[in-house]
Image (cartoon, rainbow over the protein chains, first blue to last red):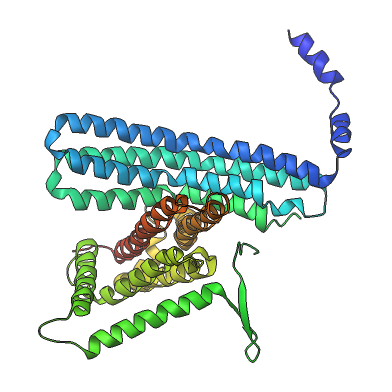
Length: 188
Length: 222
């Protein structure tokens, strides 16, 4: 098995691959990278999906325990889920920017750097996935809190929103790096 | 930094060499509206309030309530800033409904506001703890935590400004695409989520984070 792998790696010539790539024009390569990076970027949607599902599960559980509070439970769930969706929106923004207005397509320079920057922007925004999971979990806990102590509704919601905003920080850093790679890239 | 996605120059003031963008124009309009509103309300103060006065009283009482609840009693001095900041951010974020580019979708605006927060946090930190106590705060809980504390303090205005900017830029880009692809009825839903919901939530979060960071830096709330 290992021998086959080594044999394959020996026949695999990186230089040939790079030569094969360089037969295309630079804008076309960057466009191809944009398409790929846009697809990669949307993987970040996994995070908010999990998070919102967790919140929904906790909300369903709480609704079962406190049937009288079903309205405020649903309201807090939707509020928390909408905040948790920001990670998905960040990745959507980067994905749409890559598809419609990737400024690197018009740049002239080494294609390796342009392609890597484009792919890097798509990869960077994957970091927003964690934010979605965390915010969704916070939303779920907020729902449980409201169901257990409906009197403290506004205090619980305020704490939840504040915590979710701080949990968003890493996703924002991912967005910053992705935007810098696209619009203010120091390498090109 | 060329992150001026969709920001346009409107005109140039030759004498000062200033380039006036649509962000600045919209900011001026909001400032004008707020100043006229407050002057008008002040001039027409009555024992039996008019409708506009009721709105103004509601805003003032609301800001007092927010400061009391998040900073503790006796911190009403922050209420005017909180009120002005909230009103500016609400009008700025909702201005997307009128089809103009939100001033808060410009990093210059949000970073300026975050810088005010940053300065307030450290000014009140030094004032509350004294110079020595303030410096000591950077070496807690352990001395070698100093670089980490420093980085997290610098990260504060960055994350605060980019949070608002990122959300509003998302609104600008997605709304532009919605208008280009499905310009009938569909953008209404987009406006409801991206401008009204996200705009109000982000206003609240910006204001609450400002208050919370100041309170934390000032130390014991009670």
